[in-house]
Length: 80
Image 1 (cartoon, rainbow, N blue to C red):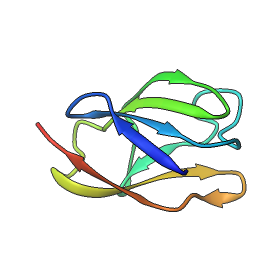
Image 2: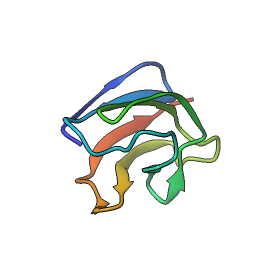
Image 3: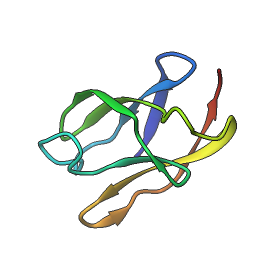
């Protein structure tokens, strides 16, 4: 994962060159230990998703877990 942008207080767009897989949930997005609540869109290079309802408020580490292993972690501030 090389970058992300905020879509709303609880949604983000992850951007990477490749490797997310062709189908949603191929590479789960994790907010700390919790998996993404809902995928808004998916491609091998870009994922849009919502933070899980029970995600810890405040700054959490976001990773994408691919078949090659977890990505580098990026900080994301989960807000109400």
